[in-house]
Image (tube, rainbow, N blue to C red; front, side):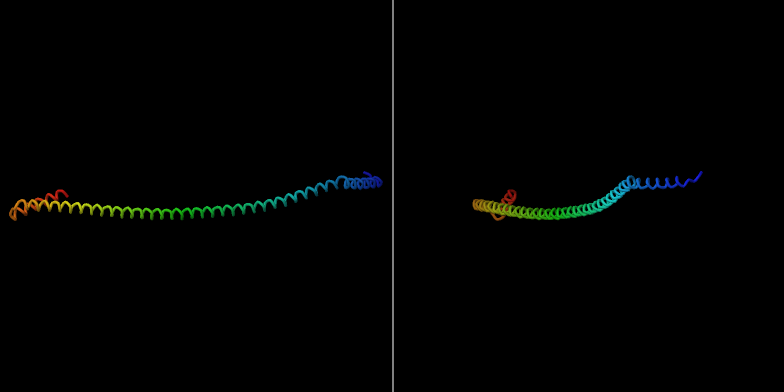
Length: 161
């Protein structure tokens, strides 16, 4: 191979012109597109980071809301338990009061019936006493016969009770 200086200079000049043309028409737009792509990717990364932070914040808010809902549910259950316990106590107190009232009523009824029975018994005894006395007067009998007659009428009165 022979070295020809003119060809060498023409090749260098051609290469320089080609470089300048490529720089102006090919490398410029290519580097511009690459710069736009880099900017776009950077923006997407920043937006993804912002979205991640927003998601973390939403997650924290949701966790807090869930915890608050749990606390509210626990409070509601505690209130329901307290209310049911209070109502149960009230129902028991009412039942005890009702039982006491019924017991007192029953005792009054028993006392009234007892008084009626005693009054009825007294009336029967006095009627029998009068009957016995009239029979004794009708029959003037001796003391032993009188005792037997009184015992007989008392047994009769005891059988009627």
